[in-house]
Length: 495
Picture 1 (cartoon, one colour):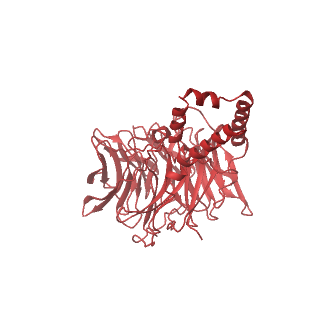
Picture 2: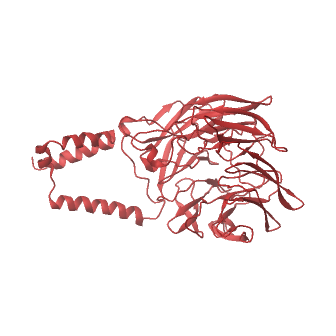
Picture 3: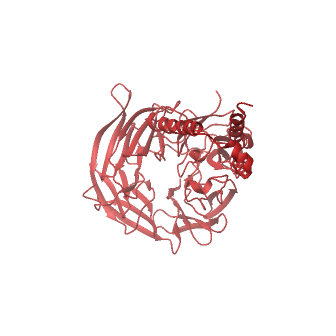
């Protein structure tokens, strides 16, 4: 047969795409047979053809602008389910909290799982993590580019880039880049050259545009090699920031004023009325504005525990924090005025980690969701079908006690879930273990009240669909958006 070898190779490639990496093991075993090796040995023309094809694909990914191509699909579609469960009814989980002043709305009704569609767009390995939507529903995100951080404005339907702005970058700084979008469609972003930039998302005609409208210089308030790790406004509209080397500050009348809390701060901060809460390496700290200047109100040390996720302010005003205390992860709720402990409880098994994130349930109750990121040290921890320890838990404060309401054994390797109390669901990026070595990533919708997995939709195959510490976000149109290693995903109900 003239093209027998070509037919075998094409068939092997199709099996690999359908069944995943396990087919490669079969192929390697076959190559141990001398006659098979001799028959398959390629000539120079074949080697040159394959090399040219690989170079062409790499060049295409490098040269084509971000947002024009889908993320490359991985193998294993035939051995992983595309959809599990049934669509949700969409009952509200409770009374919705009032919108946070001076911040773009973040709580919307998410997808119910009605024949959900998935779209992906390739943006390279830029490490985008957070998303926000302006009043025109356009998406704002901050990514890391080859030359430094890049602020991007994306079309919410096709995920193509509408505008971008390169920001100053300095190598070696331990800051991932932080921003928030306010309720006037302005982005406030911290740059690595110690400035806070206010950037509009539209020009005078409302067309997409990223133009700096104001600048606050932090260089006189921070050490030379310091950088901002937390950034958020309070309900009065004052902008708070925290730095890696322990400064917590607030911008008052355009001027930054700081106080040193004596701790290393590498997690986002939370704010309440004229105050900020920051979780450092040694403890949780409250800083408030008194007589126009920030002062440390209280420090709550971890007492031998390791820091976990960023703090969360609850509807009652108390603040919750997660710490990695031997042998289990611990959720602690403290009074906002004194820092005294209201209650504590342990979640997950021995060795649990809160690096996955802590979020409020936003259903009108003093409650949080926490994910277990134990075992996730990066994308290599989940390749070839592997998973991590896993677990998502809900903790409620009832009658002065921390009640461990439910725990799901779903594996959400990294990144906090998104909540949509309007439909009573939380959305987590999850992964299923596969003996075929297939890396199948899903968006799983959980019932906020019970923790039951309602439905799950496969959003892609392969390491490029790993959200890698990024959190999903629900958009105003009901879509769920997920930053991943290869770019962005959009999941939306059929309509």
